[in-house]
Length: 251
Figure 1 (cartoon, rainbow, N blue to C red):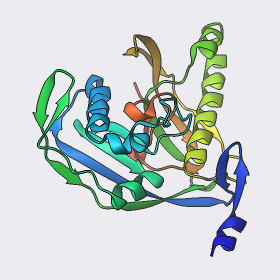
Figure 2 (figure 1 turned 120 degrees about the vertical axis):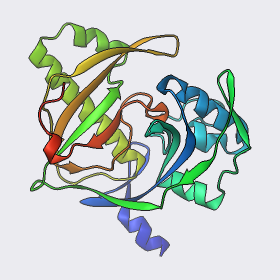
Figure 3 (figure 1 turned 60 degrees about the vertical axis):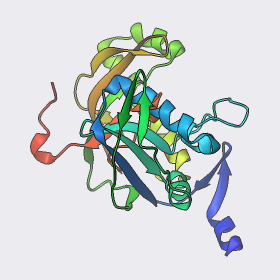
Figure 4 (figure 1 turned 180 degrees about the horizontal axis):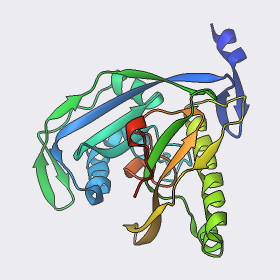
């Protein structure tokens, strides 16, 4: 069995990448029964990490020395229907099922202490793949696309150049997601932003950062609720499939 698995995997950029046309991944969502503001998500994440310190390396995406792992987070903290939630992918699912979180009766979210009940959604599987015959429209919200270096470049571009620039960044961020789930597609995939991005400045880690909400078309089939770009672990860059009846240009 080990030899078979080794034959299916190859090393790429420090990641083990599954070089096939599609990849079926496991997804699990844990939803708490109390509402949370988007700005409270980092406090919610900190509360979970502080409560379960023995497993902090999985839940906070840092290594044992406290440095950033520079890897796609497989545990992501978000809002689901306005409520606090934790989204597990692949390795994150396996770790959770092996040793599930036992929540205390109350969690401290920033300056307030809150009692939470838990709803665990059924374990799901999704096949990430390229399907050129069935392109899909997605919305990405609060996408933190730019770092300090490319933000300076972005501001000097024309409107059309900005769209192309964001498309390249979105492709790169999707590749980071692929690495996180151990998959390298053999085919090229396409990305096309279909409307003018809505840009909003969001306070994050001591300063305002540009975030974008937009729609894009791609021949990739992607799971609902994953995060892309900077800070997907705290609710930025969440994607959702746009139903056909809702595919008029977004405002």
